[in-house]
Length: 235
Image (cartoon, rainbow, N blue to C red; front, side):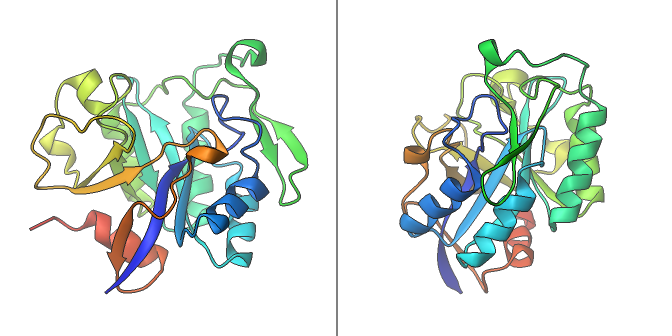
């Protein structure tokens, strides 16, 4: 087994809450400067910036886990880690089809910018991404797994939009094997011994990206090994 430094929850400038400095090049180069081996960029309800980030990460020998932070109609955020870029794009299309047709107001929520690998804006998402989809948490998990991805509850120690804040508990019937804890907040007051715990930054600004603070042990640096790790029931 080898240890890899990771930050598994980073937002790009596609998320309206993400700073405009969170461009594909800036994210990848900051991760490189901070010595990270693995990153996951998980924008709200969309995967549209992943193609550019994926290309740049390969050039820096950083493993990008394709991911999306989906929001259920119960206002629960779920990190959906996908096996391929193509699967992430398909999942993003599914979420987009199930977004209420509410337009973004950049002056209130922030810009939602899609960029290419040169950080050139190529599109803007018109629907507001920081809103609940029409999908239940069960439906989000089912679709993620149907595409061979692994869903995990996001930032369970946050006082809002977390599974504990919104539902009061982690549903056993959803068969979660891992959870995410936001690194800058107090840990949740529940027993997590049966879960793999990922400590991530939920970075919306470049300076918040982790600097070799969270390590995961894998047989090799690959998406397959990472997904197998977080999907395996902890003994």
